[in-house]
Length: 231
Figure 1 (cartoon, helix red, strand yellow):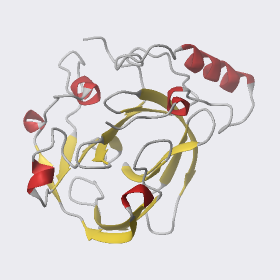
Figure 2 (figure 1 turned 60 degrees about the vertical axis):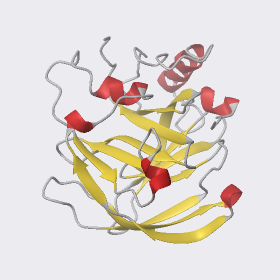
Figure 3 (figure 1 turned 60 degrees about the horizontal axis):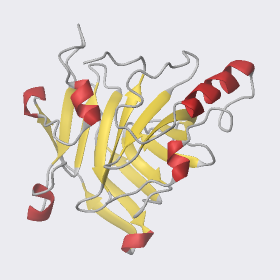
Figure 4 (figure 1 turned 90 degrees about the vertical axis):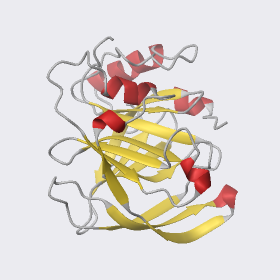
């Protein structure tokens, strides 16, 4: 199974952001939250309102990360760089994985071709060119297509993050817009977690994403804007 190295478990603010007192205080609190792996560890994490957070999980590890910086390519969605304790960990573009470090079968780069926003204000890619060196994949281009999924069809099996999003204990939560990549092979169709699954807010902003790095090893992430309600 996919294993995230210890750096994934030590989130930061001080390397990616300015050295102000509030930033260091937030970083200290985040480090104090690290202990024995627990998929629910960050559910009630006290967040600094001046920082932006991303929670990531695999089958055996989890981390809370801090947004380092955002780049906006011309005529493309912004690319966000999220940091762990020592280096860049995740880069996401409109909620889609651009690169990931510190994991087995890491993706080193991805370039997307973007379609126009749909009538729900969600912008989805139509193809990607990516490299995954440990899988001997370099600059491979593959078309992408997605289908809208009703929330009632979203499985929470083996996913604490999806279960949290779909929890009925969150009052007045607006309905999310879910999109699953259309699976192309029987091998993908038989995995517990879809090859890729994404959730967006009603305004088109990314909320959740999941992508498999191999047929059986997946990583998922959740944008955190406020503490999650207890179940």
